[in-house]
Image (cartoon, rainbow over all chains, first blue to last red; front, side, top):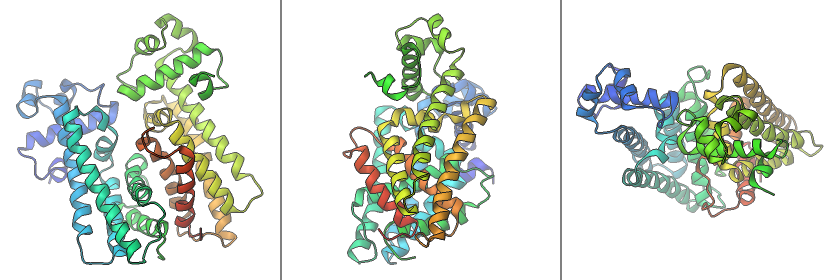
Length: 201
Length: 201
């Protein structure tokens, strides 16, 4: 499987995925604003005209990348949050998966997390809604843990933000030379977060 | 006092500080690569020629901002790390100060933390050295805490990185509408980090 197919299995055809990957690489290298659709088309080995067949603008590419990244992490959090496990077990799994995603996909995740402000207003609202849903799911699991006597937390909002913050920031510093697999890092962060929430490990 | 004088008290003359502030605002708005020296000069109300009197290039401006930001946070960590207090008290103060700095200075801090890759190699090396020193100081305090039986930590490196990560990521999400002062946030994070390191709060 190609990297772009692995990153965006739901996007069709393959040319659209190749353009998304080329956009991620270009944005990561010189930022969204300094990248042109011509740069992206060239990086994907296509003509600018061929790009416009799939995406009407550079902003549409950023939106596709950002929306997909947020949907992927929402699904990941959602699928764990709904389980019948204890809040403590669910929190551990959420952190393990969220951290591993940001490590494994660090280049995509950097665009997803740090280029938000460049989105046009309406698209920003869509992504902001996905972000709110992720944050609420995490907050709810913490609240359930507090209620069950498993966690001790002073401020739910700050705690949820800190949990997500640890995961998001992995995208900033992680590289394949980090000397730790995404999975191993996720496990260590699972322990750190449970302690942070006042659970005994 | 002007904002630029408050941010960079050691930089003289005032025109150089005004250029640094204009650069921070321009980089924050459209990224380093899409900003020109002409944009920066205009934002500071100067001519491009006047900019070159103080900074030979856009990269020199980024370096001045990045170096100063790292030096400020290094000094902040250094001054606490050397105290005679217990590791636990020192860690709390480090986190309080580090988090408050990233909240209060979030626009500068975003440039400092997220535009590193744009630095020319030699300047990058200078900043990377400052970063290593900050990380080592934090790691040493954690190690002393473990030795003193105050902290329980599996991997010193991961723990130190997580502590700093929480602080750095504040720059990404904090805004003046966050509903929490930098100081109050620092205090909450102090509790969270102490628990994360296995200390009882």
